[in-house]
Length: 363
Image (cartoon, rainbow, N blue to C red; front, side, top):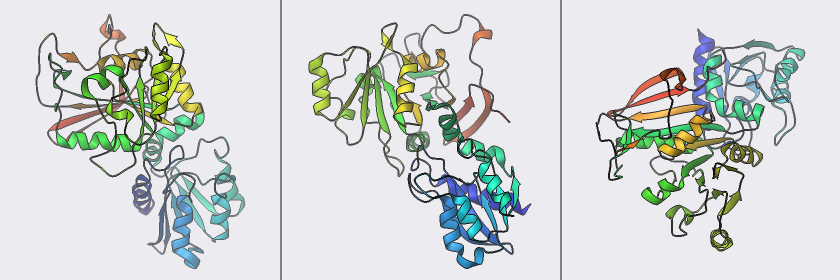
């Protein structure tokens, strides 16, 4: 069907904006007349023009009487840019095909209503599920004001993330590492625990693909991070989330341009719900949790993870003292384990990427 074919093109365009528009949604649009695409566009940067603007500008006067395909309901309110519905009406669009509604309370059906009132024929729900998944970060953030949390782990076939000596480079292959950096590019922030900083001294930047670096967050309950840690000296925003820290250490971090957030405690550790609430208040819409087994266990046991991405390498490490992918005390019974839904499995080089959600997605 032509509607699906053109919407697929719009979805591909939208993906080009991943990591560049947070906390706005990513959107793509195409203008079609007589079966030919005459305009294309996508949302390129936060605060910049939306996809419809670029597509209609490219189409020009030929947009009159054409069909507009857009991955998300057009906005109908004044934000950082004027309402797209007004632009669509003024361009003389005859029909609008919309993949899914915008759950932003300022839109949510009102944009479609404006188009109907202007006499434009509207078709909804074309490739709706694909469009919803494309903007899963935005939809959670705009309705809950809490960041979307994705847990990423790279492990051996027997569930280890390091050997008994702590060696972990590299369990997964280059293709998996490249994919992991795409995730860093896509999400607004990346988070690790202090142990990961001590053992791996990571930079937490985007290197294997093009894209901007995420905000770096370190869970450091007792303020023990060394000021020599590499990630403290790279450009970009770094946040140390702590419960207790000496004033001298805090000042040394502040002198490096690092932010120190003092947060409530949960059994001596940073209260993760308080952290996520603060991140949401700062407009940080998504967090990629890359920490070790204990950090993963903390987020999972608190049921704060929305999505997991486990890269599994065809290697067996073995050993009682090897580091498990998920630590903590674990479930007492199998029935109490965390079951994933909407699972996808794909090959990434020699590794397998296993993706799933902690809650069933609403259809």
